[in-house]
Length: 196
Image (cartoon, rainbow, N blue to C red; front, side, top):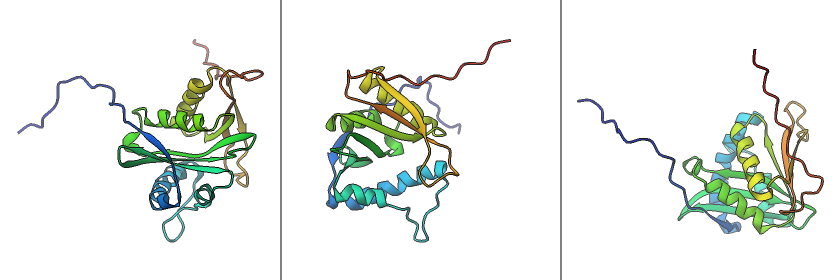
C-alpha cells in the first residue's frame, strides 16, 4: 500500500503562544534542563564539550538565579517550558542578553521574537546582545529583534571573546530606548559581487 501524501499546500507554522515569567530558585530544575539544551546548541559554535558528568558549565545560570544585577526568565508555551532568557546588567548602564534559548519545537513560530521583545520591555534602557556570526539563525533573529524594538536606531560591532583568542569575535547588537537613535547606525551589509 502506498504511503499517504497530503495534496494540501504547506502553510506557515501556526504561532506558538509564549509567556515570560521571572524565574526563581524553585524553577532551577527546569532551567537546568533547558540550560543543557542551550549549551548543547552553543557547542556547535564554541567547540565546548560537556563535563565528565554530562553537564556544561552553568556559572551564568547560577549568577542569574542568585539575583544581584541579573534577571532569569522562564519561557513557557502553555504549561510547558519553552526556553529561557538570562539578563545581566539589570540596573546598570546597559542590560546584556547574556543567554537566550527557545526549544526547537517552538522555533520559527514567533515565540522567540515575542519573548525577546517582552524581556527587553521589562528592562527599559540601553541593551547589548551578543551572538556568533557563524550562527546564521541567531544573526537573522537578533537583527529582526533590534529592528522591531529600535527601528533603525541600532548598531552592530564585533568584539573579541574574553579568554578565547581561538574563537572568532562575537557580534554585538546595541540599541537604546526606542526613539533615542542619535549617533546610532545600522550595520553595513556586505556588497554583492558584481555580475559578469
